[in-house]
Length: 72
Image (cartoon, rainbow, N blue to C red; front, side, top):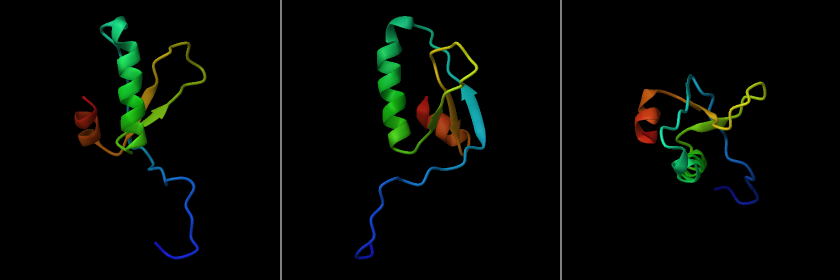
């Protein structure tokens, strides 16, 4: 890092593939949200909220299919 430079926000990638998340066991919602937040923070996927949808589960975006495999 260069002296005098400070980064307050990580650069986010531009997703090229997208997926909807479907939860088979509603009792696992808290665990799912925790895992998605962690993976999003690590830059594996991006959580995307559809403002026109009534669903609570986010959509996810990634650079490629490999990120979805990591997510799974």
